[in-house]
Image (cartoon, rainbow, N blue to C red; front, side):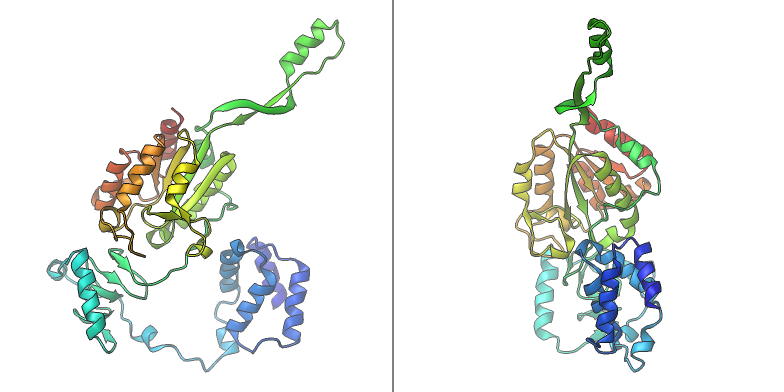
Length: 389
């Protein structure tokens, strides 16, 4: 069975060697772990994965290969009560949804503080307390046009703050494109120059020099033509962007191969006072946004990639970030980027026809000077033409 698992990892492009696989078998033979499915997962990841960048590939291959095998290891496991009693999303009529009150950001935070002091037990299906499956603005799994999500998964994507630490994964730069035309569209952003040492044959000069030398071969070399465009890419990750991971990975992979002078950072929903490069260590390895703004020349092409779908508070209000209390509004940081890098564009993977129905998209379009383009072949070509001027 484990030999099949080894080949499943290789097929998922996890760089696993035979030596590492033998180390896993030796550890199992010596019973270094308890007979637990979770323990086997961590042992396998420890012995077979050499780089955190491959954790996501490993998890997907592991889940696909061992799907439904948990019972072999622990047939007496009990499912937590919360998993069983959380109901499906409540079906509310338009009239009921219209009755749900939007408190506003400041009142939401004040009310949450009061409930944290008063509430002593779990609640489910209500309209007041912190709970699940109800119409209260606090909790998860329910329906409210504006609230604070605490635990669990979001559904409506209208939360103004998320009270939990979430794990995002890096976009995979090695992912092969499903649509080769994306690369072709990105090639419109090119400005070639001959720089560096002489590395390639200068055919015309060689012919001319040889002719002038009475037919004696006189080889001439010249610097290679290289694209001197510098690109800075800021990518939204997590939350609603989970719906667009495949397309964003295709775009990211294409950009990494087409732009030789490209750097990137991640953000979540909106840009604030810090960015990061590794989503597994985003709370420990942060880059101050001011440093990023000052580290690149003004002729750098700036490309935002994100669906711009969030609560308007996250853009316009100090403390509007769903993850922490930011001192300055995201709109101020976006404006600073647009000023520092006049040649910028925003690529949105959401369908263009849906933009007019989302207030946050309209706000960001206004901030970036309506330089927002869909992640389609036509949209990418329009964006690259704009950035190449």
